Length: 78
Image (cartoon, rainbow, N blue to C red; front, side, top):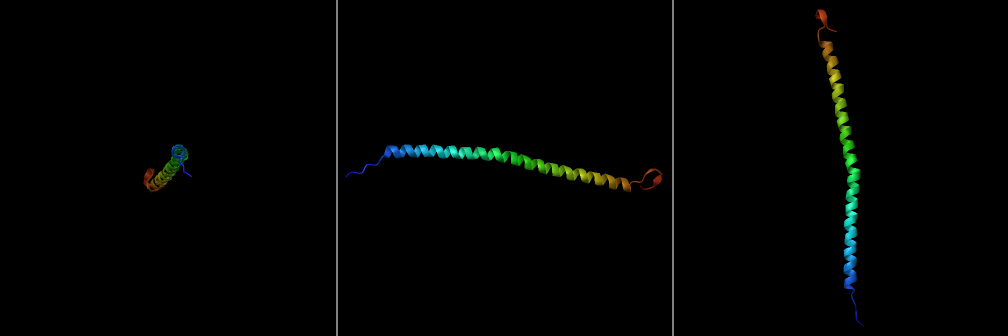
């Protein structure tokens, strides 16, 4: 009884599986980019909007405070 090892078939199967693994990694990377880029852009836009809103409210409060303490016509405070 002789034992035959199918080296050719094993090598071919190993190469075929390796290509699939590479393709899976590529698809996973593309899916991550497809989901990740809009997420990061949305997060950045949200932070920018929050910062602009805080700055706008702070400027309005400063403007009102400045008008209250600034003497108007005739030297009177408002």
